[in-house]
Length: 114
Length: 117
Image (cartoon, rainbow over all chains, first blue to last red; front, side, top):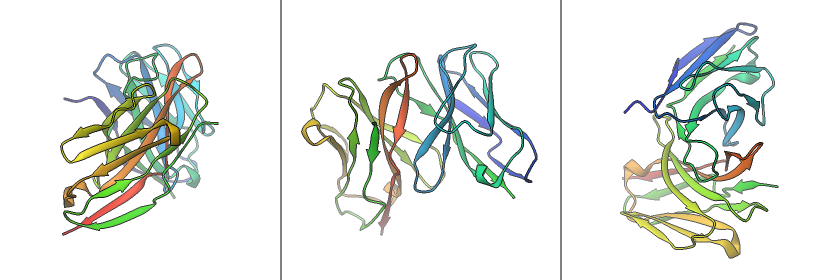
């Protein structure tokens, strides 16, 4: 029952450091997403990958890059971390092109940039 | 514009009380889906329910029930006889097409529910 697995769960970075959040799903889903959650703001879409080989910007892409390594894996990279990127990050996946497909989430990654 | 509003930031109840979480949405799409997710203190997001815009029947699942009213653009969530384990942040979300027909979820800010013994 793995579903969506993301690592690491917790990370502290210094300003300017880089890191990659890893995400993998085992549900054979086509679409994958990265969201960030900030207090009082719900979840906001950073990047998404509609299908293997494609990636697109969401609402808040600045400061991030992504890679859809294969159908299972979708990573999020912070090239030069800033305190404003302190947040909880969620990876998610869904079957594909349909507004009714349920989006399933990973357990979240707590990132602090000091 | 597409938007989800959860006006209640925090709700505190005593165990066994009934509680309703409000959700109001905005969209110009005629076909859309609405979701509720639960985020317990452990942090993961748990899918609770999905409802499409053409189905206005209320849904009941155990102690949980949902009231969808297109006339008021609302999708409210009621917990009957609340329990301490219901303590969590609850998110309402709207699924809309996004760039190429793929969907994304637009989330409300969430309502934190605290159920006290």
